[in-house]
Image 1 (spheres, helix red, strand yellow):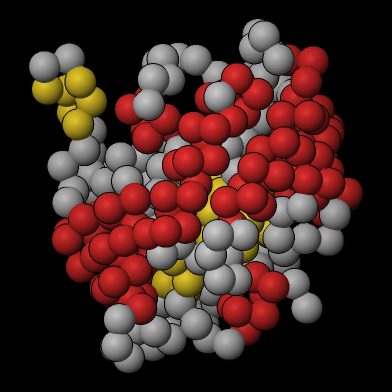
Image 2 (tube, rainbow, N blue to C red):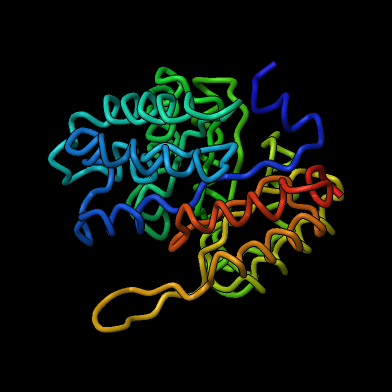
Length: 300
């Protein structure tokens, strides 16, 4: 059995990593740059961040491929090397994972960056093809699972899952961003997401990025009510960002994230990590809250 699925089947609660983009910005990544360029330009910095998450207690680390579809990499200096970047990102994450015990590597697949018809220029078939190409490269690089994340459109997420399924049988998580409380930018409700993607065979449905921890909790509750017992993936931001002295700041502390993690598991979460603003310190706090003692080492 797939190693990620083996651990999920035991009822164990797993710890996911924290943010890629905001942490790389602290290491020198310029705002607006293609994060994926660093897979070839600064692999040592990506590897160092991923190793830090493993050391902090992450059971799952995501590849640096959030914007790695060829569709989204248009305009990057490595536009023609999208497949190689996805494969190399997976290999970097595999190297980092080797420093832990049973750490799984998840292939990150974010939005393609343009809307689909009738709201934008892309056809459903183009988006399916873009995600299929990325999923194939990630699978070739050796990921254990795929995470279709920060989605807001039902149609794009369906295209992503269809594309992934066309080239690999890796377990796939589908996670949405609810930036309007408990609704996505397109107005989707958690209950619709849950019913759709559990029905299509996603191994987990999730909530990531978004706004406040309280809103993330509300989404978990709506998922759990819609599909009782189904595995839920949770990676919220470390709060709502704001500017201080020209710098983006996230206010949620590691301790607050740990308290959130405890409550998220009680509500039904099976994987808990962090998104934007979440550092290795946040992951360490989550791991300490969920792995220490017997309180929440298994799903409640």
